[in-house]
Length: 446
Ligand code: UDX
Image 1 (cartoon, rainbow, N blue to C red):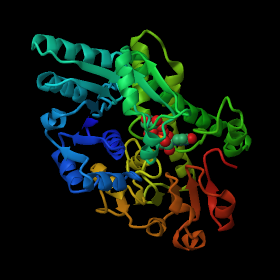
Image 2: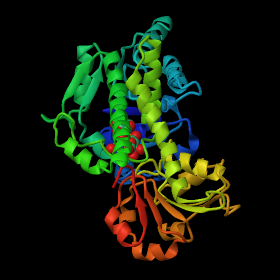
Image 3: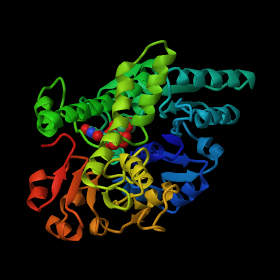
Image 4: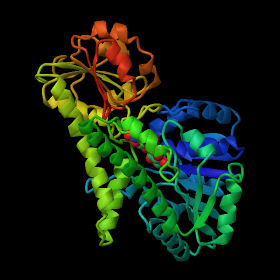
């Protein structure tokens, strides 16, 4: 099949590379010329395991290419995937400007029959509007084309996005057109087996499945963070409580980890969007609201923990291990670490930061931080974990990168000026850290 991908963010690039790897001809398009030039040169603008190999293999084979030219991307495409960002606007509503611009451009440029696949996360009703707009444009321009639109939300987790694409939990195909459903099933036939359910449903259901899934996952995390706070008071251990809960098949053992709270490009924006969608619908989605509130409160709780252990904060030096919103990604969007670092700086603390993959995005995304200029009150970017732990009064772990498990904590103990370790992902063994003479605190951990 000939496939065009519009937007080469995480979703677009993973989708394009995985579909190319299945033998399709894929052209990826983006308005960001710098990204396209990187990709054309074989480089990926972010870290995602497995993606470089796919890019290399399929670019070399000639079935994956990149362009800034939408007409070229559309020229022979039988399927056009819309994968542009739908970020949160200043009013917290989903900012649909990019997807609206793409739709307008498609209206003008369509010259052949095509299936338009909406992968971007959009509020319920958006895909139908896109469909109506395209049909209206075709009528007005008297173009006798068969342009179909399908909602096909993505469920890719950063860090394992390639695997999620190749072995999905489910495929959701939103269209009322049976023939189109079949076409989409054909496109995904290599990924489908008896273990992977394919759901055929209407646009609005497909769109809602995405928001409702992300909000429930976020709610599980916030719920566990609330349980963690209660555990802390009663001297219970949330990790053990989560394990006991997880054996119940109705609950499941995933997304029960208490910690720094959820971040990233999806949960924060999707929960906010769902709350607003609910309010617009005249409902009061209290669970979604409290999920968001608990997640925001987690930042305060972490800051309080730091303050309790570092007195005074003003003029102190804190070592930060991990700034990405989760391991195996260099993405720092809505990362809890970034929010806490901002607060620490406001309180006149100095911060030493190390992340195995995210230092570049941290530097780029942290214009508001004074990097390395005023070591006592700014941020020092470190090239390894040991540097970030040297002469600090407290080490704070925000991301559960595997390499942090392997640190020589006996050596780290010698580097610090005070042995305090705050493990905000409940990642390391309290016994081990305490054995090395650290005061160890997790989130809801004994
Ligand atoms: C999420 C969804 O999982 C994916 O299906 C969707 O399409 C995009 O959004 P992603 O944002 O990449 O994916 O990361 P995810 O693994 O879901 O983690 C989100 C946040 O929750 C991270 O900050 C992570 O650290 C946190 N988290 C996750 C917890 O705090 N506890 C957990 O038990 C699980």
